[in-house]
Image (cartoon, rainbow, N blue to C red; front, side):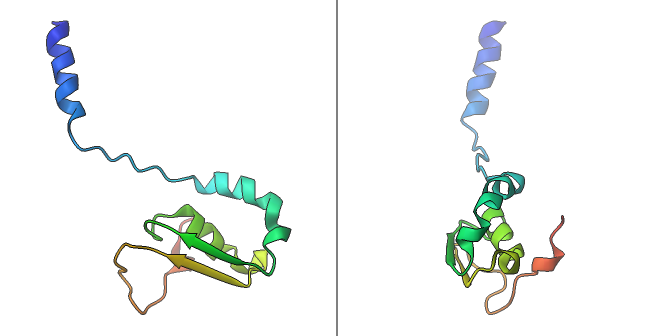
Length: 94
């Protein structure tokens, strides 16, 4: 019986996994709150897989004025859903 169980585990292990890991928004907030003065007047470059999923993007975009950033640049290789448009920053939950 154990043999059948382990074969099932092996078969399921070969299936594609969704193993993406994103740093939690709350963890970014907890760490970067200590560095707000160091960001004032600076340019932040955020290279992200997908800005719609990136919590770093969400954090810097939401706190742009509060942090006193000079400029915030985000790039992505994912095809934009809103080419030439603007992200709905104020429709985010939380």
